[in-house]
Length: 110
Image (cartoon, rainbow, N blue to C red; front, side, top):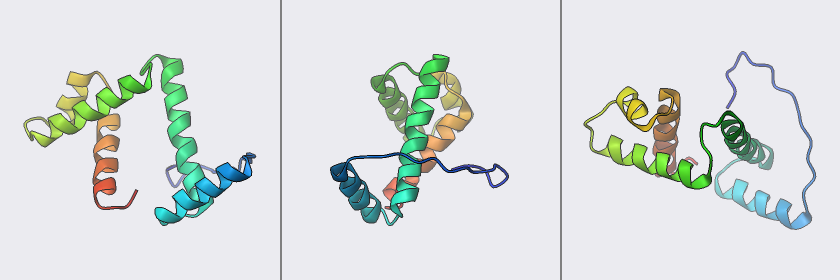
């Protein structure tokens, strides 16, 4: 989510009735409003597109590999986030976000 000091602006999109029903169900299952859930989905897609444009991550398989490697390396408890980031060639903030999201997922918060 955006930092508190960033101004947020609205964006409107149109989806099919079937997609809206799925989004509603996904949001409800995660205890989010549909709008908040769509915002999270947008953030994920936007980050992926921006990364591809910058040449950071080229495919979903690349992202899957980075997330998997990050979780495995962290689970071994031998490296801190800076070392994991350096070994994987990604920013430390990416590693921190992956680990935070994984913890939230494991607690059922995502």
